[in-house]
Length: 69
Image (cartoon, rainbow, N blue to C red):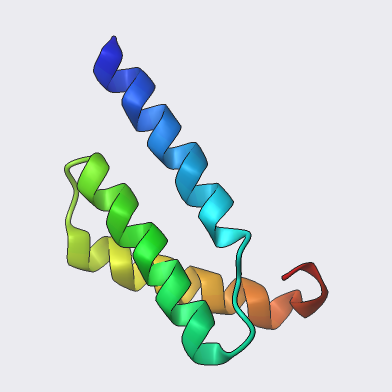
């Protein structure tokens, strides 16, 4: 039960971290990668894959919706 709550909390925090997009392409990639890696670490996933997916997702979102970042 406690593990499930921890995982849900980590997912919510990771999604919140993506809200801080960054001003430049590099910042966007770095913030997304950090959020993805952190989430993967908490969820016992592949940290490198989490960083890659998080970085790509944050850059894609911020480039698509710059007014929301």
